[in-house]
Length: 360
Image (cartoon, rainbow, N blue to C red; front, side):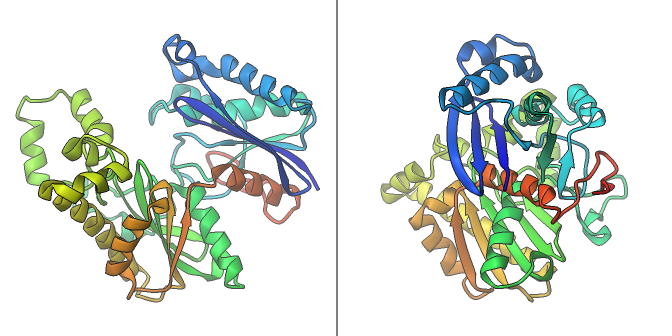
């Protein structure tokens, strides 16, 4: 068995875990101080500070930072790519350094994995980044020849929970058909078939609104808003990604507070019902993609901890297929398992950007 370090950098902290002989022997959430966050002009400028904080945390638990068989980081905003475990290479880090798809804390994952892997003389990997794009050609057609639909999806957690449910069913993930709804600050719903996420709806594009994202909007009205002069392009993009959704309607991103507000306020109740309505609608939409032949609908992400939300949602979707609820994100474990599959030669690592497999 192997000792593997998993690293998941977020906007205000870095989550890490160490796995040995299949067991989690360390798990930490390491805050990034405001000095680190605001003291650098770009996300990648935080690399050395975050690296030192992780190294200190590992050493404080008596684990040598050069004792790993593999190190795996969360994948960042890379070019569209097939799912899988990818070796961290200069092509990957060069792309993340240029950041053509935007800066995000997850872009640090590959760099942190590589620094620790170099200390140990082992491989550095990422697993199932949000840029996983396995849409069918039919799913890419938008209705406007100038625009192709693409995929940004919580692939890491979606694939992890799908594999777990497949195991519980006694089947291979590749032989299953699932609709997986990741319900968190962002919402993405994926149709899984043949080991691929073949279609997606999400709160950054054409899906339900989320805690802070607008989701799909009426196009004509959006065009009017774009040309109204109310917002600059930068301001409108910020609204779309972090200023609309629940927080715009109700002033909170916390689903628990939403339910409290909805108890005594009809407007809040309507927004909550619309939130559930749009999630259910997105799940139902992707059930048609799979011709209604579905092993399970899987509900996951942080909001799946809300029993009240799950109760409302199940009323609308329980007729579609068996429902499985797996709350949380489980991203560190998913990273670890992706690296372990490569070390155990159950899966071949891939190269970015081609997606070609590396020979064992």
